[in-house]
Length: 217
Ligand code: PCA
Image 1: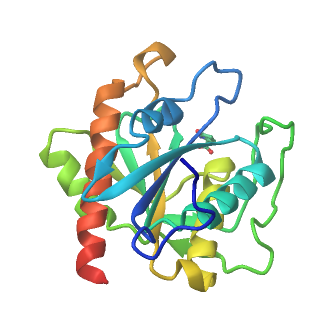
Image 2 (image 1 turned 30 degrees about the horizontal axis):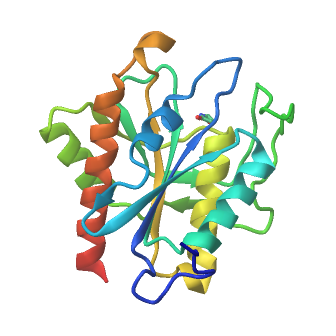
């Protein structure tokens, strides 16, 4: 079947874009990608999930994200990254305009004290209902927490770029989005969370965010 080149009016905003990253730092897998790809083509509250992989590379990750936003016109965007050392699904609250990293990205780039977007504001808040999501996850027995910093590596870079796009592009005015960090999988070492639990958590996060969005718009 031929794919339409742009979404129809009824399809507009009926897509949830879920992104994960490729492995980085010498690891063989990235728990964020392992989890989001499970949900590709699932439907939640009448919304089709499109899962896509972003490269763990500063500039390229944002180029790929922009292309995905243009292609799918999602109503909701959940960017997901792996955070070793955490044992809970972390709902990120603030994206900051800073890239500064002790380790290079997958292209060998290691920015120090650089703005994500030089003309942008110092920070953006998520537009996800993070407190509602955290409460829903905890009540289902899934470890969850609010987080004030997504770090200053590629995840924060993507988070900031996403929020900048949602704030400044009129075609994305009705799109909600934010960033979630997930723990390692058990095969990557402790602390960790099993894949089925991470997937269950992401599904619930999407569900709560869509319910909330319906009431808001
Ligand atoms: N985690 C890294 C980048 C890619 C990923 O999955 C981070 O927290 O910045």
